Image (cartoon, rainbow over all chains, first blue to last red; front, side, top):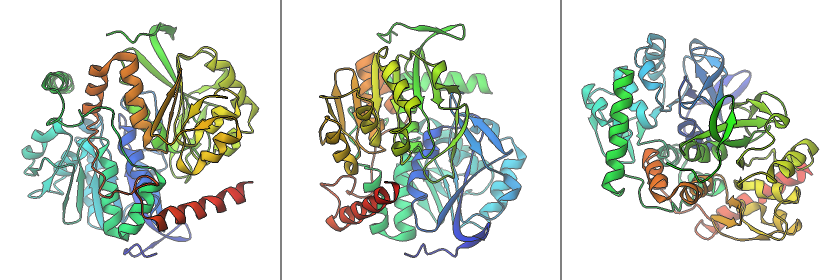
Length: 229
Length: 229
């Protein structure tokens, strides 16, 4: 099979490198969903990068994930995936992360984000003037950086693929996989992870959830942002 | 809010403990999906357990996850979640894991699994005579252990909740959350993780995927099992 990308030499073997940015207070599902899809592309090799090699903690602090390479050691991946989480606020003011995003983005074939991280791409100036999506509670952050928020589950604009909140990363990665390697490969991966979703409730979007639940989450989010600011 | 479970004292605070079993060659999405749902139950505290404290690697080896407590240190969690992955085969012959499952199961309010791990519960003798689901490629493993395989995305039988392959863990956890804390809480969590799935293809189950793709994955799975046996 052909990835449609030029493989690179990495530790002696040929592969297409996918770098996933890890940081403190990241959401593990934003990583694990797209990881499960993209890592099954032929010749794909995922590397988890961060400010320092070693463990970081998710948003609840009770799930640890390993950073395997420091940012400067992965300067030219083919694909970058930026997962979301409350740690986004700190990332937005971390120059090492912003600079890595700017420099790697010059080389990527695809630059992708899940949930609250398209505002991070926006803060780095990478997607200015483009369309993007994000978690439904983070839309204002996008327009503040000159990006047009689009209320879709997955948005492609050139080489930029952005997903809505958390679980939308799976849908984004499957669409991306189809663009890179064709629908057949994407469908094989979908069947492998038995992605035939059957949510027990119809409450997964602002349009579908009961309005009192939307309001509950909106007010909680405002409290969190107030504490963080 | 009331979890409907009796909270325990853990490191000085009251909580309901959810233990997730980590092992070498685990699938991260099997963990991260249910984690994202169950960890947002009120008073819930997740702890990642394994044979040894420290990092384990997922099935591809390129994502590291931290075991925070050794099995003997978490003898009586309220809920256990057993994620799947190719490491299942080794788990099935690891007495420390089988014994931990048997002893903790005596205390749990809910014993749950995702993907290929209901056969591990079966191998431990915990769900003998019950109904369960698993990844579509692992059905024979269940019947070999005296468990009735049911081709459903999520199966509840008493306090046992089993999910089909990988991504089905999200659906299972939302249903479980509703049983524990009501539909309102489950819907709030669903909206928080924007779980409004829109797969780009209709290939997520054996019934829906093109037959040549089903056959491709079946033949690959047979090769893997042959190598592992």
